[in-house]
Length: 251
Image (cartoon, rainbow, N blue to C red; front, side, top):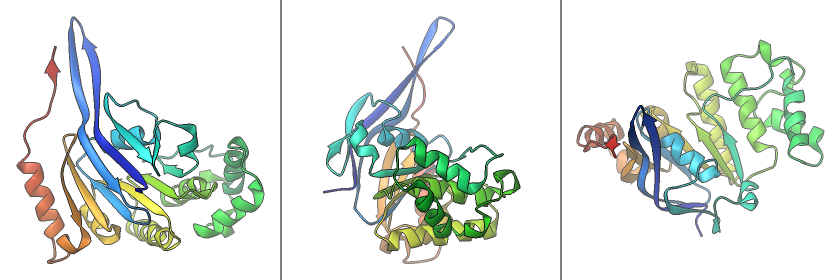
């Protein structure tokens, strides 16, 4: 059984402008099999459909066609959400609260038992134990990102979905998040990451899917891109430059 599986997943957005109606494909005919315990990276340019894919898996969007399952259960379903922890690309928290108060707030909101104990533990996991009583207004972007990861871990999910987890971070924060991702895998977590940063994807992922204009054009294992330096970048650029246009359709 796969941790996450999508089958022929398609999402079409309809938009109106004056008297014309346009459709835009977010993703098209996307089939993915994510193994339990692996780090899978969805690699693509901005606007390629990465966030759309994540929102479909989370049940935040309804697919136009196709299906999604999490550990064999169809999505959307409240039951599947207990398996998933989610970090958005730009997490937002009340900056007047402390790191501990934020986690306690979300834990109580989610009905998690022993919230204070779990909040303390997760702050230690992400390396913020000594910052527990500091307001988030004092935190750097990388530290806020770590609070977001701690929040995603509160209910001890089997799957973690991180949308552009190192986007906009400085090199030190990038390394900290990278090490944390590898640590979470060692604890048996399944991680699904989206990114447009090739160098980060190739450092942490077991497999990578290349998404171009909503279509999955290739899936590779680490062995396939580690044959020589820069191989993943070469493959990605070749796929992007060789892709056919998938744009707006007037109806």
